[in-house]
Image 1 (cartoon, rainbow, N blue to C red):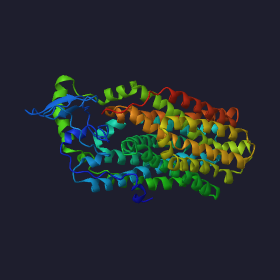
Image 2: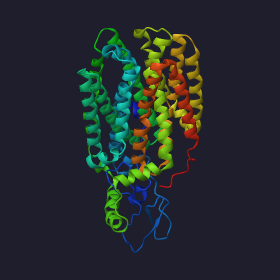
Image 3: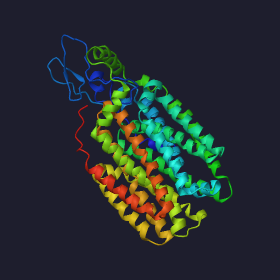
Image 4: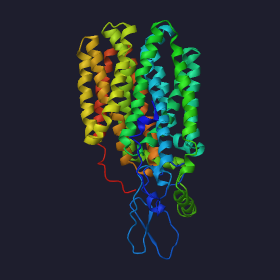
Length: 495
């Protein structure tokens, strides 16, 4: 994957130096959510020029008026880097490398999440455990995701974006080292807690970064399409290694190497990230500090998270992603076991069906994200989920391994664009001042569905049978549609 793949996506509009940077700051696509400050610009006071006045826009940020009292409508840049005069080319290059880094991190996430589905039969045999016990790895993974929610914004504010990425990769690497050593099963369960925390941290940072780029739906399609590529590669490599006598835990040597590489790449591409904010934006932060301390006080990170949790879009978004991730990871984790127990499939062959599911997700994210954006994200999600229900039923009822494999792949194709479309909608509905906190909460709590649902699927499969995968997924699709219908209409952002 080269940076040229992102060239068309990240073309920056050429523009002359901005004569009035302050007028462009509040229109900045990247917003304030990505800055490592604990301030919300509820009110910004510009200098007391005798020939100018200020007025507040709907966003709460003071907008300078010209001497005639008419708002200055200077052209706003399309991505945050283009707000810097005479720096368009350098900024474009940096953004391409940063998107590449984000995609490689998400590729590692897909590699991590898709492998257990192919490895579960070998883990069960190696440790002599059943469905219910092996499902504990999904529980601790969920706990890691949930714990990451209140810390993501604080860690970025304390460490800065590059070090926050490096920390997330370091936590992942620690978890992989434990697994590679093949310790007793309780230690394996504990290692998945580290994996959940590290993945949640990098996912929240990457979602916010891509959601604020120009053509955010397409950018998110690249990001989560890369996750799908990892999802394809994971089961292929895991099945090939384990079925040829290689110890199953050695698969995670690949994930370990990728995590270490991503740590170095993210530290390099995002270096100086906060220092690149426009000078005027930094000035407004400084000017607003003393005033906010005097009148209102600086909002703490805890208060910011509380505001995000009370937001309707945040709660509905978390519910939607909880159901989506629950269905996605349940299919990936248990479809192989379903084909072995209910269709008498050969483990060395049906292990590749999970790769077909992830291939469908990847193709859907790369090929269908842009058409979904053209149709409209809200309508597209409804149509895609309804189609997923239909093919999930086919997977349940068709008594043939090949037919099931095809149907599962189509389910993946339809589910693929749903996550990037949903994230784009959330970013439009959320105020920029709480984007990081809200999307972190959505990613952490929502993605825990990818652990809770597979765990309960395993518990039921132990007593009833692996066919329970399908009614559980259909129920989760219903939750997705219900939560989606409750979202407010998207209005034009005034910030």
